[in-house]
Image (cartoon, rainbow, N blue to C red):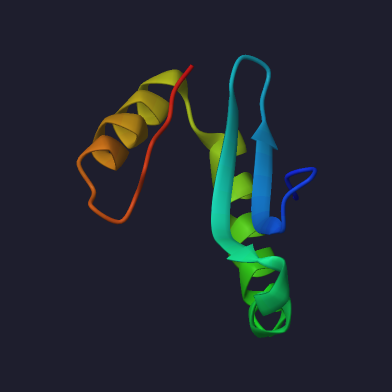
Amino acid sequence: MKHRGSKTRAFVTWCRGHFREVLVVHAVYRKRNEDRFFDYLQEYNHEGKQFADRFRELSDEEFEAWRASAKNRSDVLLVES
């Protein structure tokens, strides 16, 4: 993913279900640092696949519990719309 007109890039996983969507951002980096982040591409892909598979299996109650717990984590920034 990239922001047009900027030199910012990101590795993301987009999870789309019937009634909800979640975009997981694994890493945000400057274009000039791209080589360092591509070294971790396989890890980002593996992590993203695991998240997407789990996301599809969540019931509404499980999703709400996940969302509530994510709000309380210091290593997660949850943005909702």
